[in-house]
Length: 206
Image 1: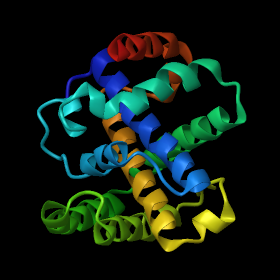
Image 2: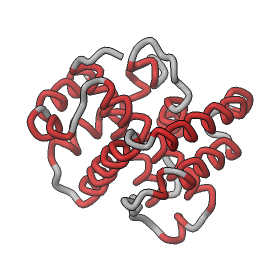
Image 3: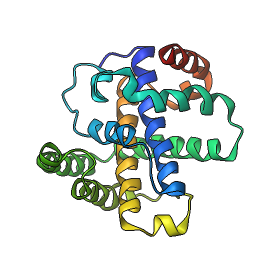
Image 4: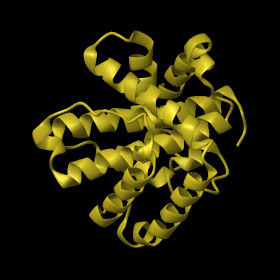
């Protein structure tokens, strides 16, 4: 992957999209299916030619993430915005821990590869696939000391299908965090280069 502002912006938009959808599912019990499939599909795009190809190849596939990136990360005001920002920062921190654990990386990669058959036959939003991906997250990332506390409606989150969607989206968020790091992203850039990324996201939305 190339290490340009464009690539970093797309990868961070993917991360923001996953975080935004986690919030939507946790509070509403649903989210936009096309946006959801974009996140899940990214888990299986291991040999994509470009960063955009990881998310389906069309800028519209990342529209929700670009919107969040250009508004939520710019304003940091409302409580729901802070919730999304917390998820984004936690996912970046978890990915940093994951990269230092090659055995766990191998397990995740192997299990995602095993799930590819289900994805290709039933699609990226099928319940069996989402349950599978959720179990990957629960068996690996969830074992770290830092655990993402998802805010939302207890009644909604108690439903297995919603909990599975949340965990699958968090796994997709980790995937985007990996991509962001591979394209040259780091935590200092969130402080010192945030305006450049936000402005580029706004350009891509036009």
